[in-house]
Each structure stands twice: as structure tokens, then as C-alpha cells.
Image (cartoon, rainbow, N blue to C red; front, side, top):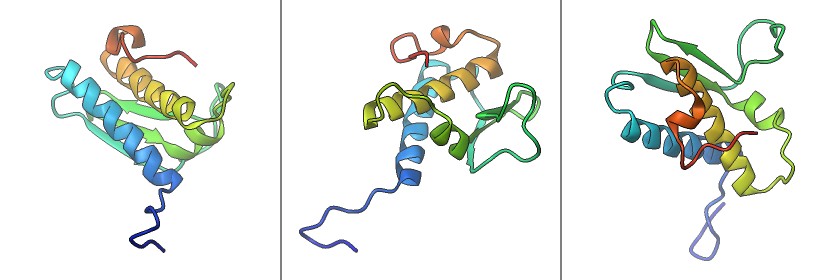
Length: 119
């Protein structure tokens, strides 16, 4: 419930989607030709059983030109040294950058040198 005095309620889903959207916009501006036609999607959890490396945070399909980010593993399996909005946003952005780096066969530092933070 909101009104003229109350601020709109911002859910974790809204926050996550906003972080992903801003990171995607950034990388698309930095790599317009390489990311032309790439679809970015958000899903709750990956299907299937966890692999040897654990639960996937994202899935990249170069053939389909598609990146899927899994919200719940990214949010719940992050081991942040400080759990605040800035650190959560930075971690979500780093997942986008690492997924794009995987798609393009590059290092995440090359994808977003001013914004990538390794967690």
C-alpha cells in the first residue's frame, strides 16, 4: 500500500531487475557490435540438478545469443562481507559482467574495467 506520504515499496525482485537492467545497458553501450541481438533474461532458478561446480548463477548460450541470470542463486548464495545495497548491487553487476565475458570469450575485467568488482 502506498500513498502520497509513503514511498512505493521496492521488492527484492524490483531491485534485482533494476541492477541487471543497468548492468546490461552498460555492457551493451560498451560492446554494441558484439552484443547486438543478444537476449538477456532473468529466471528464478536453473532447472535440473546442480553440477560439480554447484548451483549455476547464469547460463550462456552463444549459439542462441542468450544469457539467463538466475535470481535466487545470485541473491541467496552470495557471500558478501557487508550485506548492504551497494554490495548487493555490485555483486549482481559482477554476475552480469562475468556472464557476458563468458559469452564473448573475454575476461570480465575487459568487459567493464571501471565497474567490474570480483567477489
